[in-house]
Length: 300
Image (tube, rainbow, N blue to C red; front, side, top):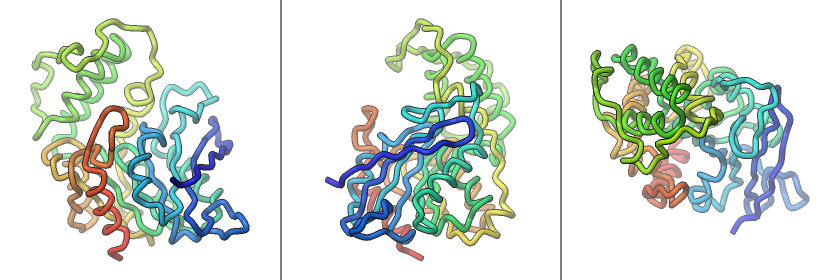
């Protein structure tokens, strides 16, 4: 098992903590045993999922220096500015600071879900820091043909969270994220899902600091990618979708982004969390997923 070194850095309004799993020859730590170049660094990025969600996937890349981190406001990376929301632009700047702190040059990035939105924002601004970006199912609802209905549904999830708490809002989120096809204009007439059916609490505990429902949901899904900047960047971009995700919001958004960039989406095994190997009680197909990721990174 690779040794894990945890570091921290101070960013505007937050303290960021990230982990480095060094390759056998040394890694991005700059030790006397050798310092990795960007070609050997793989940065695994999620949002609001923290570093713990990539434990299984990282285990398939022991030949590389693997970096994971906790996004601001999540797990070990505390916010200090009192802000209620985080934006993709803030996250992109955090990613920039972590990459620059590695002092390894341009790195490869695998980013999933909200992390993929944030990584695209990073490439828009600092493409010189990323050699290859594999963006897996970025839920950028702004690019969808049914974006007005989709964004209204997402706004309703956030409003439900503020009004009723985590259980009812998360039940709606699960139902919405797994829904196949376009959102109808009369979506509000549909009955709300029962939190108990998903094993979620039905009572409001009064907290409103959930990283997904509170801090990132609106800003992530509402982000409009800058396609001119993405096409102008030196970064090689791969847009990936899950084999089982066809028709779902994040997969549909990924396909639209790929189309706008003139790319064919890469189809990865399993679903939106296909790289998970039991983290958060969820299982994908991590070994097959890792093989697909390695192929995408090496197919330059």
